[in-house]
Length: 87
Image 1 (cartoon, one colour):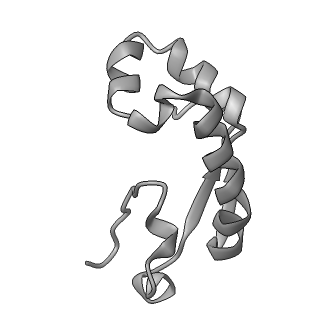
Image 2 (cartoon, rainbow, N blue to C red; image 1 turned 90 degrees about the vertical axis):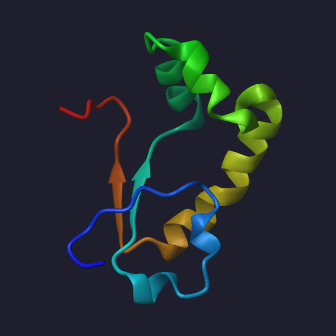
């Protein structure tokens, strides 16, 4: 693929040839902000169903905390998205 944006899952940073695929952009936001954003979304129940790791928020936060350093390490660009909209 060329000139394409690929939105991946949280574990994609482990792909061995990640840097060969293209630029890695990490859209960074705090855990509490992400949860709050999901909770106030009109389709919140469906959003949480699509995210089985959020069934246990304590474990979800632990996973989030574990991945932060790795996300920043592999990212070519980090964009802080907290308190911003997609528009």
